[in-house]
Length: 443
Image 1 (cartoon, rainbow, N blue to C red):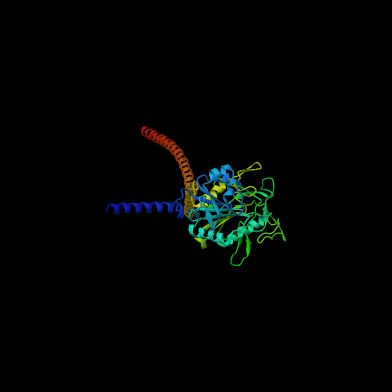
Image 2 (cartoon, rainbow, N blue to C red):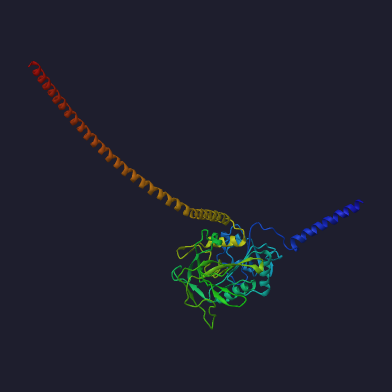
């Protein structure tokens, strides 16, 4: 029995060790991300320029770089190598870690895949891996293109191929956009404006102007008919959110005309106005995952969007890129407070609007009451006038009574004098009669 017990223990320990080794070295990695996860593709000819600033700006992210091989690590500057979370080698459909384990975008718990201005085409298998990631993780992809300035049309074609495959109506047109007014000392160094709909107003937190160095322009493509259309500020297609525009002085330029290149499909050389350069769309066919398209790149390229200063002009590149990433990954970070404050402001505005509506509804009653008060005021004024008139008439009547009283007094006085004279005359007459009688008697 003791031997059997020891044998059972030995077998259990052996199984435990075997399972541990399998989970560590053979089984697909089952991991729990400690933050939001970003995978940046550098295996299709993209430049690592600006990656150090990107990693510093996204300090709370897990950042993994997809490289063609481990030899490409030497292309990275020491700061970037110290800041990124790890490296992946191969292609999007066949990625391996430094220790040789096979991983996928899904197993890495990727929240955002960034493809910054590719110059090498993607295989169909890689595109299927992208679609699988978007459909399963329901997260986001940021595709960054270029203008038609050589070799930009190669990048445009690669990006448009991916956009069409994932079912997006966004596309890069085969032209360039310049701005003779809002620029960094050259029309092709466009200083673009972050102008947002109310739904995405939080993306403008600390971000107003960004560099778009030699950018292209975004168009709308009807996948059912293959037709292209320009996107204008007053006619943005439903389901499309434009995030960055040129100034009103934007101008379309054709840098690679036929036979070397293609003509614009939605825009023509010489067109002037406000043109879109960063836009986004949710993909209902892939579980409402998000695709972001920019006609210049957030990192890499000649001078990336993440630039904070260029030719002495202060820019909001780092803040803007961080805002886009926080939103796209769903992490939000500090933007949560911006959204909350924005909601409070909207609620306050709604309450004020309701109060104004209530006041407007009461205005007819106030106006009616005011009219009635005015009428009563007029009546009071009229009554006051009548009272004043009556008072004057009474005063005149009193004066007439006083005059009449004085007249009567005078008459009374005069009447009293006449009576006295009559009495004297009567007395004299009586005396005369008495004297006559006496005289007769004496006779």
